[in-house]
Length: 156
Image 1 (tube, rainbow, N blue to C red):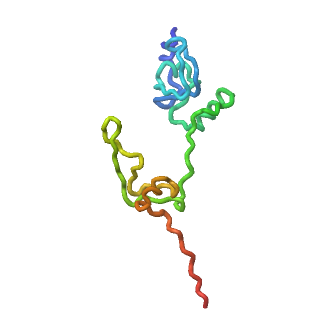
Image 2: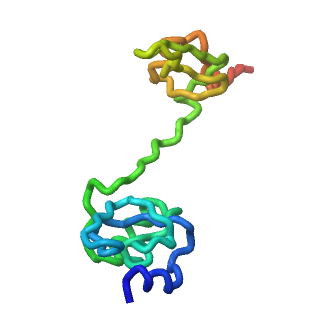
Image 3: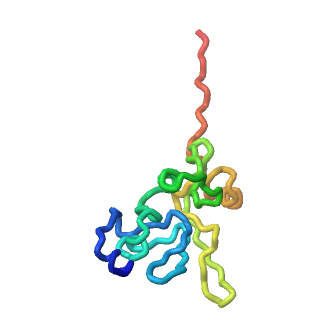
């Protein structure tokens, strides 16, 4: 029985429609020598994930969850270049400014088409005080948190 037919007969071990390759590997399905790169997405019912289910995980998992699966399945350290999204720290109101008006400008590209400039912003959009856009257009921004004045102490 060929690998393709065997993959079609098996039920899918995945819970999502799409799966992600955990690591780069060489598959023998549908032809010998097909390279599958880490992070490649396949439909869960495709012959490659069906034939090599241990090399794939559900698509909705975070990078941290994928790292844990790699550690448990393959019992090896993870390469430092494994794609990880590092979220920036949330912007505190004390360190932020908010746009009080929108700015939309366009420039012509090399082919003469109008394209939006990179420094466009919308009313209500928050930026760090140190960001280049609020420094360039200070009249369009106000602090998010107004510094509180110290309470007046009355002597009696």
